Structure formats: structure tokens, C-alpha cells
Image (cartoon, rainbow, N blue to C red; front, side):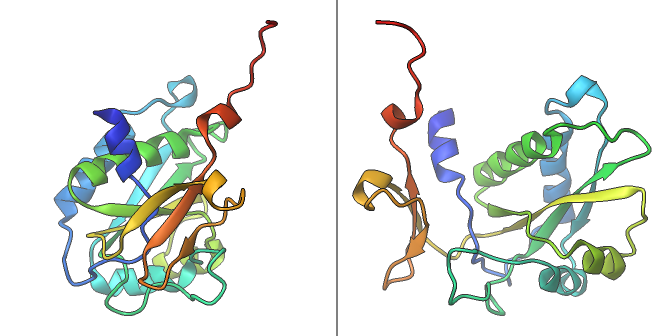
Length: 194
């Protein structure tokens, strides 16, 4: 059921780094992005895939992790992603891509969850450093990095009603990652007169 898949598709930030992901798996996930909707069907997204530990080491320091967890600098060695998908926009194709990267990225994450993997969208990227580290040509705009791997953490959804209205995710004393979500009746605006 799609709702179960969506609920299971959480932002995972700790992985079993030593459990490799195959390049073929990343290609199959990118294929889901390729088949997703694109503004005016321009399809300007391009992808860099990495399952190579040496390349992953170049990518990792270009990323910022979990802004709400102030005392956590990101995954420790051994808990880092086993793979990355970097979503680029090829400006030679189009500069008008609306939210293509978000649509493709969600399709990729849903596919990863279905395969027993987990991932995290990372938009806090040192783009200049990443461009230099991977020799990314200037006609590619770096839009999003998706970190991927076998999950090494438990993530649970909470209601903001049970968290004093806070939307800030947090970890408990057992390392369980809690993600507050607003209740459905709070986010639907009744635009029709009664």
C-alpha cells in the first residue's frame, strides 16, 4: 500500500556503511526519477552516482547533516552512506525546471525504501567544494544530494500534538529518531462555506 511506503520513507542519517550498494541498484533508482514528471517534459535532470568508498569520502565533507541536532556533526565513520545520488540540472537543456528534482528525488527515495534501503535528501551542500571535488562542469547546477544505504537507526513518527506543538525532530536516550508531523485536521483548510 502506498501509504505504508510513504510512512516508511523517512530521512535516515545513520547507515551500515560497510554494506555496499551496487551501481545497478543506484541506476534502477535513477530510472524511477527519469520516469517521473518533469516541467514541460524538458527532462533537464542529470545524475552522478557513487558507490565507491573513495568517491564517497570526497562527497561526505561537502554536506551538512540534521540542523535541529545541534550536538551532532553527522554520521560517524561506519555510519556514513554507502552510496550517493547527486541530482544536477543541465542548464544546456533548461533553466526552468520548477520542482523536478523534488519529484524525482521522492520517487528515488520511495524506490530505495521498497528495496530495504533508506536515504536522506541533503540540500545543505557546499556546492563549490563538491563541484571541485568531483570536477563537475559549470553547466550543471547542483540541486540535491541523496545519501543512501542500509538503515542503522530507528525512526518513528509523532504527532506535534504530543510534542507541545513542536516540529523539531529529536533523538531519545536510546538513539531513536522522532519526527513530529502535524495532524491532518490541522493542515486542511476548509475553503467552502458551511
